[in-house]
Image (cartoon, rainbow, N blue to C red; front, side):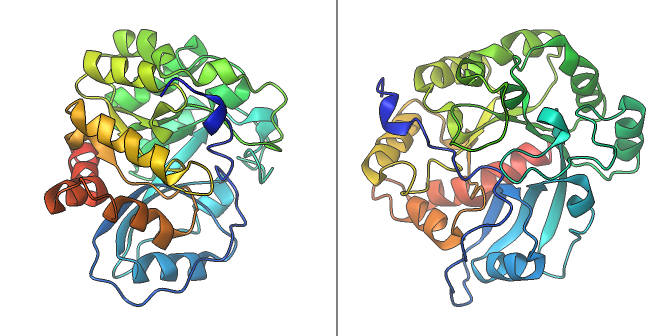
Length: 290
């Protein structure tokens, strides 16, 4: 697990607004809570594919103008996220303006008002790494304070990134999950999940989860066999289970082919049916609704 070269580009699908076409799947009785999803101009097609694959809840973050177009349907509940900070005011990869005014940092008064109106369900994807700063940079503290005040989860981008993200200040080392330590000390009630399980900073992720029992991770991007080899993904999940974290692992697709992402979990031979259910939706239900 110390080899970082194998997974250098593991999150190259992060924030891609125009995704590869989803594979057609028959209606499924699979129950899935996708905690890591981004927008798509073909919104209806995207949501229909998710529903056919058993997704009944999805935590979505994208440009705010596109974000507002996502609403609940009869069979799919949408959790609204807010990307922050936005490098050069834009969403990485897609390069859409995060906010209509082009700012990287939205007004905290505006963000709080949205929280009061229950129009923000989580802060994320937190893009400090793309901005070139630590996740514990004090510039984030006013937003963390609001998240703690309103008991809103925070989804933190950790790990690496793919090419062509359009963020000139991106720093690989800022993806280290341990960098959130100071913020967690300052905001002890903050509810955080590490996106991409922190890879390739695997050992750091393990230490953080041991030190902070309320810290969760999502398996998005690393569950894509085009990004991380199936064998390495299997070993990673097995190790996380062996470390005792089966109640804190959550499913995410990160706009990958949803059927492939789900299969990456359900095909793991060492997982019991109950463990699969925990990863696919039960853990996320507990985390988001504490």
